[in-house]
Image (tube, rainbow, N blue to C red):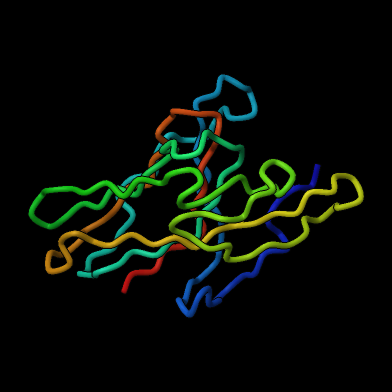
Length: 168
């Protein structure tokens, strides 16, 4: 249907004064047996970080909705000492459906709409698209984070996607 993020900003952009490099999309699968999701992963692991930080910022979205307060994904931090911490991605707190017609609300507890705009063929389907900027505090800012995993919780038919990450 031509509904994709080709009209979204690309390259170096700032959302709420936080810099992000937007180059592509990491799309995960939801808990769905639909043939549409064949070939998509449940997780992308070991995304390199190799630094200390106090806050993790992400540009994220969801294809599909979920019940308010339901965890649909996570960013799992892996520390140099072998421990890990899960930053849950919760529907209605960190993001909402990327189609405005799928969920007209834009409010969330812990995120802001980073971008909203048209898709390539608005005359075919009238929805607008949006992505969110959300952030999580690192509970161990003095410990080096080696990498993180982006995982689908496989709890709903909402499929999380990740566009960019910045740490501060």
